[in-house]
Length: 203
Length: 203
Length: 203
Image (cartoon, rainbow over all chains, first blue to last red; front, side, top):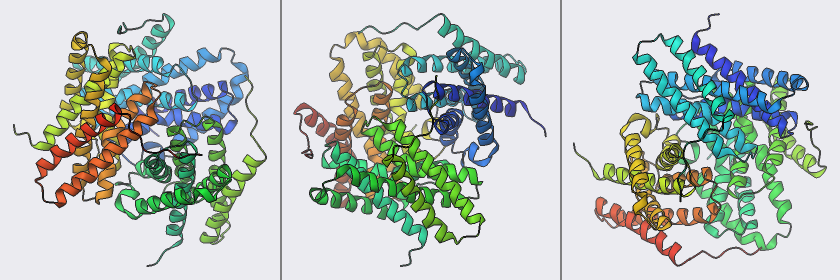
């Protein structure tokens, strides 16, 4: 079996978001079924919205049952290992940021293969990265949705722009991908860690 | 005109959810237009999400105007008969559970005809059964959404698994369908009636 | 370059909703990125849901980058001109009502070209007109969503019915379109201005 870069990115992103979804659900004290459902929704939400917009149906997770199995196993493993993890919030945040970078990159790349213009590719990457977390938070009634959403979106958009800049300067495609994933991951951590915000409008 | 089992299941499910949606909207004191819209959304919500995911567009209710007429007539009848019904909550709950069973079965069957694997079929059945109610509750701002959602999902998933077990033991297809619909209906009533819940995670 | 009536309607609708979305976002004190995103979502939300239901994918804004540029420029212009506008709420409301009329007409017309029955065309027009505003309000956590939603829907449905009546009486197509757009615009303003509501159900 040969796994290319894109497969690896999608698999790692699926695992990251399944872990982040499981943690978020356990934090809200859902029962095991609820945890599985939130893990599933977080993992496949962004890609599903992307595939629907592209008209690439049946959507990816329905054509290949391996994604569902991967999410199921990841979620069960997360439930079992949770007693060994003390810093719930930090772990959740790190995996969420990792998934954000991986899925944004995957979304941008998939949009490119559909022959869409760079701006639209960046929008689709942002949607792929953000929607899993947005749906997760909406279902869990987490309040600070909008604030975090902005950080999400800003990180994704800048990452997407960076990817096209790197390609323009003829950096190798795989190197550019890894740089972009790392950029989004680090950017979001720095923004949240140091509470950096854009200037707000006064009314 | 010949009506096969699947048509009958879809028609009964549409009526059940139109009644449940109308009751929920009247309970929240919406005007007649609002009642019609909530009845419509509850009835077609689950099937619409399923058809979008399958890429089976234009979605079912757009290709056949009879579904809209059925929902309209059911909704008007519900509004007129409401004065004769004293136990609002119980009636709403019974029709909602009936619709859940019927639509889950319909969704599983439709996914099978698309040649998808059993796990994915069960997921699509769950989506068909649950999304109408989820959208209805979201639009009506009903609070205990998440709790009921879990009961919804658990009943649908178990019903879907049961269907594949019954098929495996060569029970007739139509018999299996009726057993599954009855199972989901009764299961949900028992769970809600006796307040059975899965163990929650402690934090 | 030739612009026909439908193009003009879509362009004006896109601009109207981009302005309404920008104002709503500035009112909630979002940062510039947030304003752009809300403007974008408000403008493309209704059409995206319509195109998904029709199976007309990749959806319109992804095939033609000009829509995104139009929204971007409108949004930036709105941000710069905002200091000259004192009556925020009224301006927001007028552009929102204008967009409602334009997009409903566009949705009805597009559904007709897909050969759907009049009732379904009206439903799709209503969806095209309403969903941008619904998503905008949901993301911004505006509370009186449901009330406004009913006014939205009622105006759109009546406008759609009016269009088919005008066509039936052989009024020119373009004249009928302008009459319908004006009707929805004026109807909504009158309803909101004089606080007209349909009778509610008593419980």
